[in-house]
Image 1 (cartoon, helix red, strand yellow):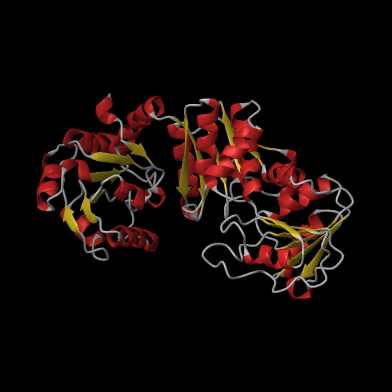
Image 2 (cartoon, rainbow, N blue to C red):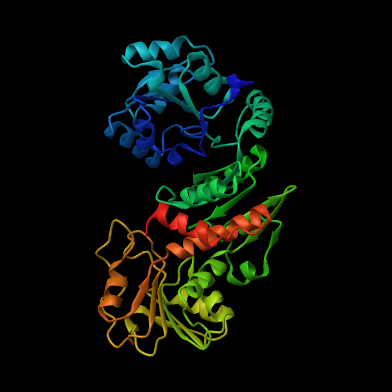
Length: 432
């Protein structure tokens, strides 16, 4: 059975850390084409795939197309990439793996094979003694012979893959969620793995289908799919329905249930900082994916009023219609007066644009007002600096990230996870 087990798993090539491979001593990447780089029906790589390969080459890694497909298919696909290729690679035989090692003068242990099939890509890599990464197939549009193999491959994956949880989004490469959840698993001795999953809207359904087939136990969803995920779920919690978005899905006996732990996460962050929510006047800048959950959280804790400022008024109005006590306003009408809690929910100021802020000044804000920016990278945003210059306490979104992640773990594992010692460990590892 060991011959069918990959060195590592990834949901797709965009979720593979090229720098991490290089740090492990990898000098050459071998890439399968169909359903690894592109669906079988596609005749060319996507722009994101071209960029991923260009980044790998920029880091000094050799990249080779290594396919069992025909010369015509491989060469046609390779027009944009202009890589060295081997067609009819005879995977799972080791012969052409060894040929590539000699051709590029690299050691067998300096090669990584990335593919979507166990019985060709992974088996061949193991036969040759090279590292392998198994990714989810990009499309279900496959011939009967491949579908037959998939049935048995999925059984192998379910039996040997660690209990798996994931984050679906676009982008996700910047996310610190894997670090957070891996700390939870280590703290409680849980045998599990948390993986990133870069998705495009057109292949979301295929990713979810593969999650079912390979036994994923639960997953988080971030922008831009917090609403798109909802039609695929069997049940949705009351607060997630009210908010209109889901960020956590629990899978039990084939039943998919959606929750929104952003609500819990933000409320817990405010309470951890001793912020008084009941009776407070809240102003929010932005009406994006997380805003509805934050509005719901502060209203549930007794906020007296909420004003949402946004560049696009329609989005702000939609929130105001959804919740009692919410007023919509244009961003150019923003003022910081008459405010007890001020929150930035936009991505303005997110790394690498660290010199930007959603507003240029907080004139008139009370020094007693508490200011939050849901961004946590950089740890101190320009928006936070402006608030501190006005004498306000200002916090980033790291604790919200931590608390919403721990709330998701409590749903998945059915037990209390939140622990002061664990929270401090996560803060230290992620950095604040």
